[in-house]
Image (cartoon, helix red, strand yellow):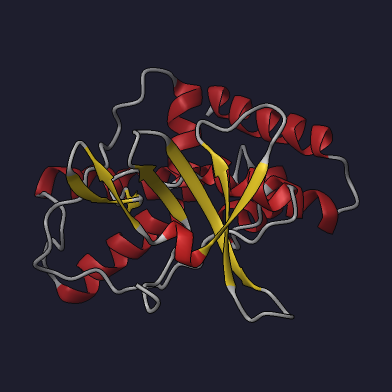
Length: 216
């Protein structure tokens, strides 16, 4: 198991306990690789642990059955909030490779225009902007519905046009904030650092931004 690659994400231990692997590190003296992890769900006061890679990747016997000590949970999504929290603690978030969406892949699970409140609709539209924009232009470029239904494409187009018009008129004062946060992808912490603000001020600005949609 020495060549096994340990990626950031959730792992289930043989006894059912779920942990979140943050990263791996190499001991400068011994050269031994170490896995850095924390318990899930995250505690209010974070507690970080380390295990040698050899120990993390070993197998154990449970009721006479041989099982991996830790098994990766690929269906558990790593939320943006979790990544931001880890970054606030000084840890690097998981590295994502950007892959061009294939035309023949299954339709994505995003539900368009299904938010229960206007505030939630505004938040969802902003947080999914880059994904939605790329999907829209992929469909236009390929001249077909790529991983999206005809009806959802119409909703997607309507959402993007609505957002573009709002940022040019009623939401014009928030244009720079929107670009830095949802186009450039700055976290609240990084936006605060870039503008020499405290996090509470940026949280308040974000609430004002989403609330301003109520008059759109």
